[in-house]
Image 1: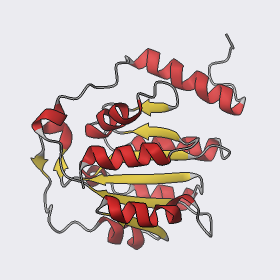
Image 2 (image 1 turned 90 degrees about the vertical axis):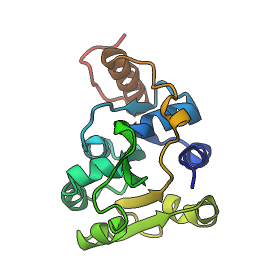
Image 3 (image 1 turned 60 degrees about the horizontal axis):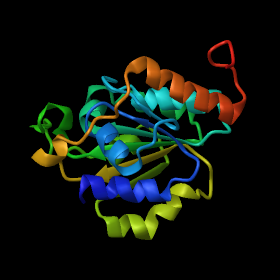
Image 4 (image 1 turned 30 degrees about the vertical axis):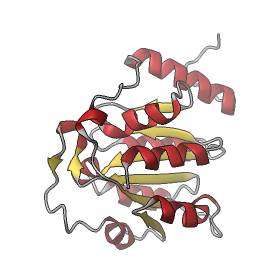
Length: 203
């Protein structure tokens, strides 16, 4: 399915979820779909750590619902993240693996073993029980309710099989925030949502 169509579908289904995006195309796609400047954290140069950041936030703030995105290029750098996520097992975290079989941040360089990498099988092999995979909008429209409304709460892993960005899509705007502004926008939003104390003082 088309990368942007997939993200527009997710944006339409989002309710109060906090969103973490990864380096590469997911930040561009989420910004294009939402223009969200507070409840989304665009973790640039994350080098496979976006879902670990989301996992830590989910464990620290169990009242929040967290969506964390990661490309399969980043996932292949650190698949062991699933061991940590499985052990912590935050039921309020959905880990989205955006599989375009390419390194999207480096002009769609081909991922090694791209035709054979089986991400749902890897997740199940590490003990995850709530594992989903979608390769079309029709499948998402039909079955996404099972992701959002689990019969048994558990850490959720969702593979999104998408086409790589086109050359035109690679030129989409990056989220227009430097690191300090993004930190304070997102941190203040979390403080308001949870009444926790992140920065040690309130404005």
